[in-house]
Every structure is written in C-alpha cells, then in structure tokens.
Length: 278
Image (cartoon, rainbow, N blue to C red; front, side, top):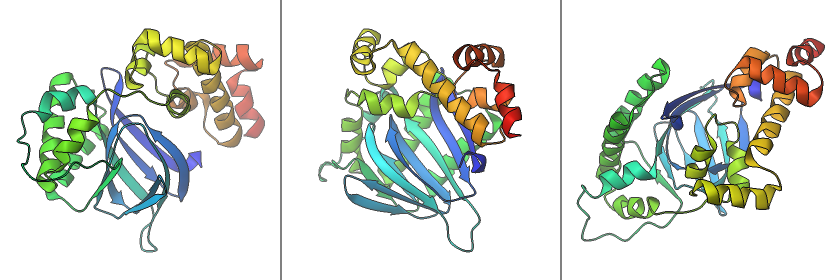
C-alpha cells in the first residue's frame, strides 16, 4: 500500500492547505476530513460513500467536502489509464469568513445541507487547481496574504459554478467541534503543534487537552508520539522505505530525534528494523 503512494503537502503557518496524491494501485480507506476540502480528480475515478449515499467523481470533476465528515473512499481508474491523481485545497474557516461576505447572496436558492457536494467540470476551478499544483510542486510555503487571495479565488469559481453554495459556505465557516477520537486517528502524522491540533479540531488548547485526556487517558503529546512510532515501525517492517524517509511521513521534525525516540520505545535502532527485512 505505502509503496505506491506519492503525496506532497503545501502548508501555511505550519497548517496543511493543499496536497497532491498519486496512486499506482487501487486504494480504499476510511477517512475523517478535518477541514473543508475541495478535491479535483485529475486522473482516474474517486468513489466516496457518506452516510449511506454514494458519489462518483470522474476525471475532471470536483468534490466539496464539509469539515468533520466521515467517509469511505475508493480510488481507481479505467483500463486505458495507469494511475489515480487528485489535488486538494483546504478552505480554512478564518479565510472563508474573511471572504464570503463580499459575495452577493442570491435571493432564490435553498441552503445546501449535504456534507458532500459534487461539481462537474469547471474551467475556472481547474485553472485554480493548476495554479495550486505549481505551488505544491515548488514546495512554497503560502503566507496569509496569498491564502486569502487563493480562498477568494476558489470561492469565486465555486459560486460561479453553483451560486447557492454561498449558503453552504456561511454554514461551513460556523464554529464546530471535531469528533476528537476520529480526528486524531486520522491526523496524528501532521507535524503541527498542540495549539494547531486544537485549532483544527475546533477547540481552544485548554478544551483540547481536557477532552483528549478524557478520551485517551493520557496527555496528547504521549499518545501522538506512540502512534507515530508504531506507524514508523510498520512502515520500516513492511516497506523498503528508510528511516530518513519514514520519520517525515509519521510527523517527526528531525531524524536524530526520531531515532532516539524509536530506540527508547522499541529497544532497537530504526535502521536495524530496516536491515532485518532488507
């Protein structure tokens, strides 16, 4: 599974704001979306099931997913294709709030309450995603001013394609709390601070710490470290990836810290795990 994924992330102030994912084998998984996601399927087909309803997103189409949505996805492709590729842009609440009021609200059109909204081909949105692809490939950190411009740009494209989406975005930007168990199980590899984990989960740091200890029966930093090390051991055991690649994938900041933590936890150097299966 892990050998056939190529994932690149784009960040702003340490928070993930965009990503590209390429797969060379079919993939299925459960995911808990921590933010408002716009997904563009560049190659292949995305199937996503939410609350018993199934959506199929073909090549060139888009999917808008509301924050804190639990879903099951399937990623595959046609016989004349060889891989699946998608691009993702995260519409963070603060940037939505700053931009959405500058767009006119249509007099007619009911609010859209579904957590997943499919959009067909849109030249404006595709051009937006191509511009995000340039930033992702260049690995350029986006500052707040660029994020504000990009959020306004993508909102313009979305509202031109479907004006009634403005009701959804007003709803999307309202405060909400994540299911903390699901959120952390899907987010612990993100190399962000506890303050940022709290923010992404819709909580203050104090509330995050209190809720976390109640659910996991240990401090956040301890649980996060254990999960990262366990995942690292699986990657080293079942793939050919080296410690110098794995430490980044599981959320550690530097190789030396990862190696010390791994040996302290498992009693063996990560490079020794690699040699056993190499």
